[in-house]
Amino acid sequence: MSLRPIIGITTDNADAVSNPPTFESPAVYADAVAGAGGLPLLLPQTHNHAVREEMLSRLDGLVFAGGDDLNPALYGQPLHAKTRLMHERRQAFDLALLALAEQANIPTLGICLGFQEMNVQRGGTLHQYLPEAGLPGAVLHASDPLNVTDRNAWHDVAIAPGSRLQRLCGQHTLKVNSRHRQGIARLGHGLVATGVAPDSTIEAIEDPTLAFWLGVQWHAEAMAEPPHQSLFVGLVSVARVYQAQRR
Image (cartoon, rainbow, N blue to C red; front, side, top):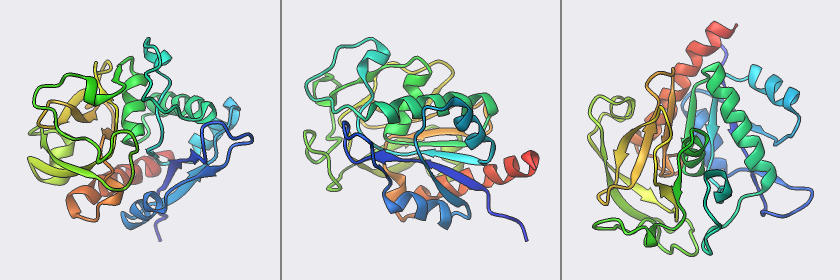
């Protein structure tokens, strides 16, 4: 019997300042991974580099989950009044793990914050508050930009023909949920924009030189439709190949 590939899922914190922090994760991430044939494993945040490396050596794939905002000092901007900072411990852990995953070419899927982390880790920048970004024909990216909840806004995303995302979802346009204040301003090096909203906000990124390096701004884990769940199916499929090579 073949073993399910182990997919690590980054965890969030109860709030940005609690000490010691509490690690938590919405169940939909684990459910999406398990439903796609993977074995979900929630990852505790650690500052220990040796532990991070050993943790990664046991994994076949990664999901970088949603959460609060990166510190804009990472990309050379002052703090915006609307930015809600993530816990420093998670920020340090996620970015370190992302760099290690890139070096090892581990199949990786970024969701919302995870998508933004992928961009910033590659030297890209963010709009800290999309309603003030001056985008032409701006669409609503959250039901309440000041208090993002599960009450999503919705909009279409145009998918780049021939991209991994297009091959996975089998469509050229997707209707997605939208619950984010921030978005990509300058694309990070080596990344390709493969999905855009009607106001040109980048909604999906890939690195075509890696086995599976894909990020989406929307919460695909919360959408049961096949085009969205296909992202997890694709991740697990490539992770299965990585698992065979690793073993």
